[in-house]
Image (cartoon, rainbow, N blue to C red; front, side, top):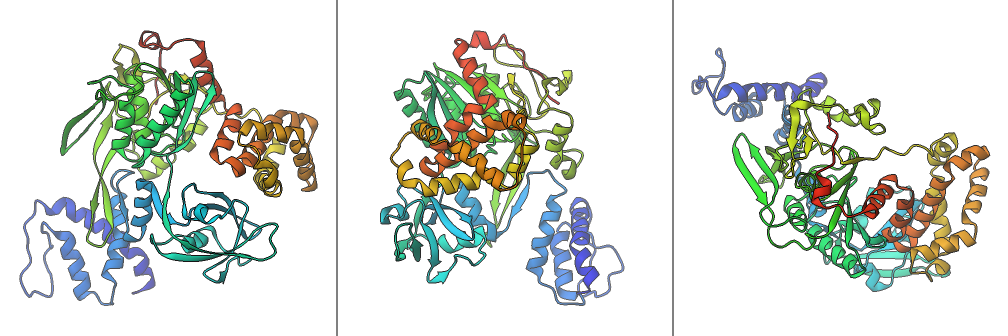
Length: 550
């Protein structure tokens, strides 16, 4: 195919297909059998199929019809909403694994450092743990192929270690303190992808549970986390949904149900071809009589917004943080014969008060994708007063409190992005990624000592006793980063918390990371402060005034 035509062809075809789909329904078929030269327009109901057949049969050059269709479909969908999308067959496995909450592999988390695959965590209950593989081990070979020092990329290593359940992979490991390499024949198995990062007591009577996604196992993990916290004396709960972009709707419905009394509305959906459908709470709630607070930010989307909106509109608990993303479109997944699928938007989500969660996309996909950038420009992440009123989108909660629509969920208590510790010194350290690498090296060299501690606060106390942060500052200076004492004073609390959190993550996983990093998290600190102030009953919540959003 001519080079220029090859570049333009998919775009031209997409435009023609969309045009034909719009007009073809109302125009008669005007083609004569056996007619080679078409002198009249070819309008018919199934113009897309005709278009492809004509190109395949009569086009001057040979083409790969399937490849052409694969290239054209995404361009057609760009004319629709931002969340209707096509999933090629080659991507379906990864998408399915993420949503189901498991994949098949050997059960390790690793980093590539100094061109070496270094295991930082072994998944509990996975094949590697059963064979005695440990954090700190270096993977040198996979199936006899040397991967250390070969410039491997992360996804290349993943593809070598993952595979069909029950298949074998041979791994050669170098373990510190051992002269000979250790050989392991590992049978790949199901590796869980957990939705709950942490569930721990952040203060007396206050538990915190952080959810990173809504997958098939999320509700079960969530309930287990709540029950564990209840056993430790929790009567108040912080549900952290920051950065959670959503997932399975059934899981979020079940989660909200744990907080609402029977017959209270959770959310409803409605679309042009879909009549209104209401989702109500049942009698199964295990946290209906205790306080709850929901943390959200600009990356909380879809199912996270359904959760926050249901809690807010029913005056059930507090919402803290910043305005959420604004994704409130319902997609149905339609599978095709070749293993690919179309996720087609068929309806919108509405909170119990009637607010549409979806933000506007009427200015096109490019403008839609720039929303976060525009929030920064308008100071929405740092100044609550920058969020504009819109009296035409005023709604009432169950208790009569005013809330506002327009896209996303506006929190009851706004917490700005914390930039107080940012300066040139901090930026220089971040650019060289010194905190992360130093933390890994320290944990690796002192793993035997640190493994003696089973509690994050004991490790933190040990790090303080060893003056690890001062050792880190010496490392910083050796990397030609100079700083003023005033700069260090400004950013010290951030760097120290990050350093200790990453060291503890290499020993205890997320249960070592989040308790330390949340000590400098303004939104978490605000949440704890609010819950410690007093009892947030429905009568107290309805007195709040939620500021409106764009």
